[in-house]
Image (cartoon, rainbow, N blue to C red; front, side, top):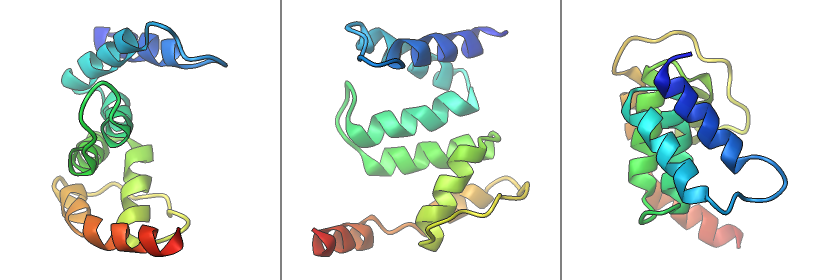
Length: 123
């Protein structure tokens, strides 16, 4: 297991379970370190941390950018999330391997303004 994988697994373990770890900021730091080292699943998880504002300002734009990077690095979860958001589907088909830059293009099709208007109408 490389260092980035160990950091990611440790951070996820600290966030898992029935109760949030009192040391959640350390867990976020471990996930950030693994993401910074290029770990695809950690980058995907960083997207969640960005959109909920965990120990940072909330940023959907940064979260979506992280999903694109994670998908480009092989995260199937990130790829499926991008498909759901870009194609406005309720179920993501299993993505085929795609050329570099394809996931960034898909991310660019996601309109946060349009999604915000829809969320406002549903409430």
